[in-house]
Image 1 (spheres, rainbow, N blue to C red):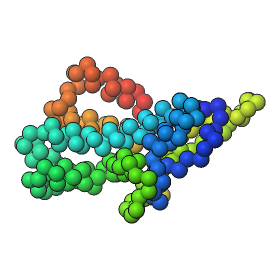
Image 2 (cartoon, one colour):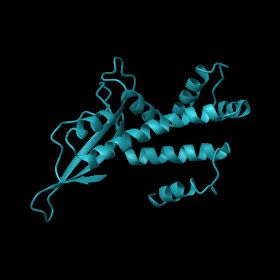
Image 3 (cartoon, rainbow, N blue to C red):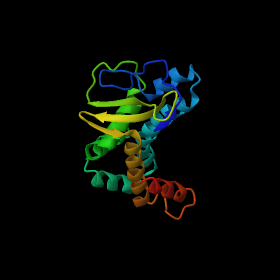
Image 4 (cartoon, rainbow, N blue to C red):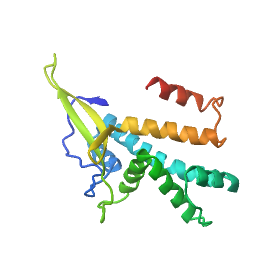
Length: 195
């Protein structure tokens, strides 16, 4: 949640199942208005979705053949022994087990397209404004980033926090990171304080 003094003048449609644009498009629209705090928050949300998606590519690309076999077993998918099909199968297997990854992948990929020809999912990202005038002459607005999955809604921050914990666990289990690494520990401590 962020707080802004006034609601942006443009109406934003964000990554809906009917093919609207994503958080990235919101950033572009808002940059023109010079509302940098809001634009930065939009970009951070978009970047979290993109990063959650690309962690799969980084994990797969960094893995040895033995580790790839472990990933296939852990996520219950059959390898195709194909450099292009295996990473796709890995992502599909993660999606099957982790709906937050499914949502992140749809937001990241949906932001590349102006309109989706065949929406195949109930994922939508929204920006919700709430005005408060309590003890104020002029209202201020809180801005929440929400990810809808059909009838269920989650804070984008919660979705991305769960993705952070998921990937931290995968990378730690595979030996790609260590908890005693000074670059990893501050992010983990910071994320646990927010829970």
